[in-house]
Length: 184
Image (cartoon, rainbow, N blue to C red; front, side, top):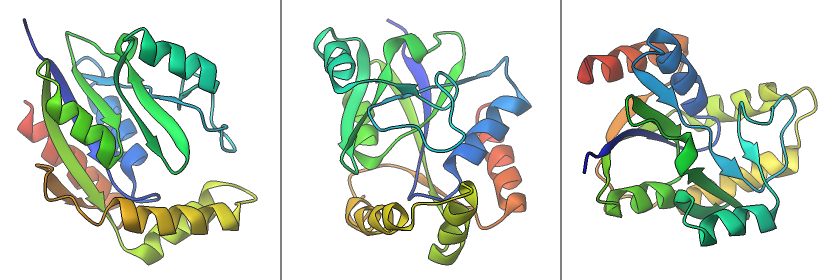
């Protein structure tokens, strides 16, 4: 059976994962498929159903997991996230944003050909991005995500990944060049 190719971008909140994902798919939409993940968290300001995420109730999410309709499912920052099998393309390279637990699930799946990239930026830049993401940012939520990320990203020794430094727009473009160069 052919493996499904997956490029997994992961990193702390505000590191620029989504920016790199969108730029990568835009560069070559015939080659790259954007994975739209499922989540039980409420939409943030400006997020759209089916574009940023599939926003599900906990019952809908649980049903997908129990019906084996998910490639992977994890809990992160008190919300559930997962990849519905229907979001994958067998003919393209699938690109998605994952958390460390999601990466570990993908690593165990024998039907996935996985390449993982850890997107990193300074804490200052991450904070600025998160503050600028919404007109009225929830400061307490940003602080909570910062604290949770410190714990969730402290031990990544079991994950095989390449690091992408992403301080500015130029770095995002270089990341897209790096990834497309590895898959052409």
